[in-house]
Image (cartoon, rainbow, N blue to C red; front, side, top):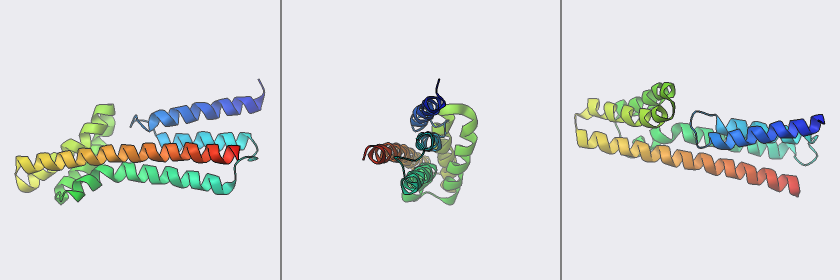
Amino acid sequence: MDTTIAWFFLAAILVLIGLAGTILPALPGLPLLFAGLWLAAWADGYQHMSGTTLGWLAGLAALGMAMDALAGWLGARAYGASKQALWGSLIGGVVGLWFGLPGLLLGPLLGAVAGEWLARRDAWRAGQVGMATLVGLALGMLAKIGCALAMLLGFAWAWWT
């Protein structure tokens, strides 16, 4: 097998895993997607891809990761959550890492609810903050998927033009 074909094959594998990672929180989707796109550009000798385009792709990856990381926190904050709820969401997200997909989804939600309950002792308000956190997480996932699609489109545009 020609080594260039092997590099393109590895790049395609990284892109596919990266795309899966935009939906599955346990995988670093956008960094893997960027790595696959960069590897394809490198294997091609940068004939179709400029450094500027790769810089834009890296920026999109960083933006998507930042939006995904902050989304639950921003959702709770936009609803007017207490500092305890914001910290609870952050701690719940970190603890949730150890429990796979359910933990990644429920950790920030439960952390925000627990923090808001400790701050205000109002179950209704704590539930509302939890739902705002969940909406924020969903919007963060959508933003991450949007960045992934923009990366793919930007790469395709640069490759074929």
